[in-house]
Length: 86
Image (spheres, rainbow, N blue to C red):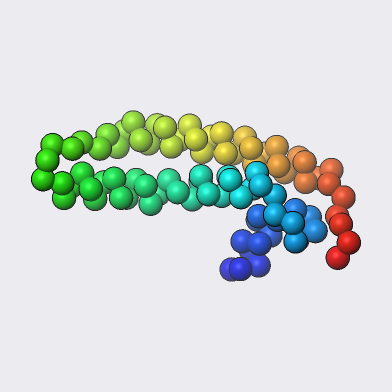
């Protein structure tokens, strides 16, 4: 699992981290815990807090669409990168 995560976050040399990949992983990975946390909070909250799941889903879908676009760009860039010394 560690090797897979490292391959997803590093450039072709396997050592230097690509800031774009790290940001994409953080934003993409934070959606589910945020959704779950807000849902639990709205259920157990004694006040009249309301978590709009539909709006969150639409916004998260838009964010993930942007991340997919970034992933396509990263994939194209990776094809033109030259591997560094190993």
